[in-house]
Length: 168
Image (cartoon, rainbow, N blue to C red; front, side, top):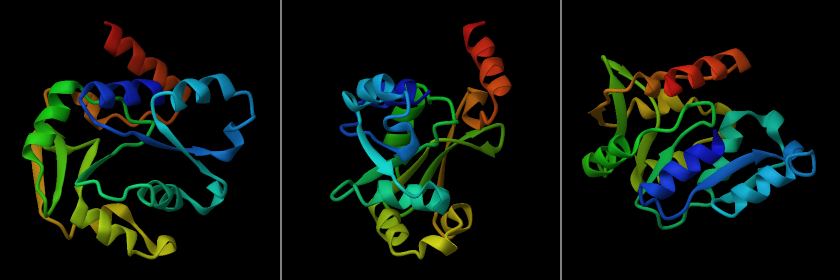
């Protein structure tokens, strides 16, 4: 999924893709995969994964310097289609977040402007609850015709079920 997501963003014209990876993957039999990924994206190694998702998020955010916007996507969320990414970029709000919505429910990825990125960097990592933090910003919704923006594939069974729906 990381490779699919990376390819989708590159195809959409995103200049740089950062992927935060657990240090256990480095040298742990994932070298061929990580080598393929590093040819497309910049890998950021998380040496302290036990510090949680907020730590991974902050490691990635520290890599962003002069970016006007940043898509935020978990690896367990399927890649968005090019049309949706383009519409999100066109609808991007420099003062708030942009989210895809399917039948009234918001999904992934989330597009964050520089203002939100800068504010997010200033948050204490241990106390950060991203969903709560983002609620304080204006929200632009982009309608999606695909329900996969709501998918969260946490198990092997969910992943294989998702694969069956996209190949059908």
